[in-house]
Image (cartoon, rainbow, N blue to C red; front, side, top):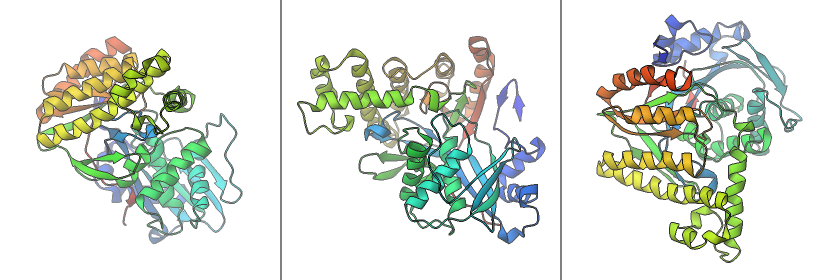
Length: 417
């Protein structure tokens, strides 16, 4: 599974490495393995509900979702699975396959945890709390969680856990909410229960992903459409810096507040402005003196990034991959210099991969402050990417990167027996 510090694909924690590939290709085998765990022992196979929810990679459109802008994510085949059986009480109790850690909560009387809580179960409890507010009937369960999504890497492991939890906790499967409403309920769980002011993109992609395509989402109207990717000749390659971020303690919420401050300043004399979605590059430039330098830079990134997303979609439709690659490079530079959410490790991986023959485009993906890069690479360039990263990244960062080839997949759902 690994060579020279480069992982072709992560192994689901707690699963023997020799079995991992078969389980990833055949989720039914993973189901059988989870059913045999101590948590689910004694339950008949038809009592066990197994669900999956994918992570996501965002091709372009970073920090635009909470500014009512455009994003272009794809759900990817790095996923979280939960196998569960109903309990006879109103308690939810889950065990992590990787660590054996068990935690739980009562469905009744849920309230957001104290500020600073770092329990992973808060994400699950938050989903229960949010679904209950929607009037969804919930069930107590005992279950096991497995995942091959690297945590704190910018591939939306939290959103995958939230969507898998929603499919697990609803008394009915499929849930009574459609994919968009389910994504919104999970977003509210992270915003109001966990306390991270994320936009909708991550939960949306995990809920509604499409095979072979990315999804262009208008975060104002919530309209979306599939954008086919050139996957006959090219692949999506994700490079993990192995320099994890902690979103709760990062400056993510601060960036959102800076954007809101910019909108408030611009709207003083322009009441039609409700978000940075309403601001053009020309308007922003003309109002430069109304904003402090830091706020201007944050706003400039968002305004130009929205334009880049739409231009990127057009480039893909036209088959102009050179233009798509230039837009990815511009996006990364903007995130590095204007929004200031990149890192030395992310910059190193982008530079290394962009220099490889056959790589069309490279940029950081996700909220930043560590995490992953995404690359659009010719199929015959993937080995060269792995070799370049293994050769150059450790000396520049002191770390070993992980390189994953990922494919777009469908959104969260049941894994049938």
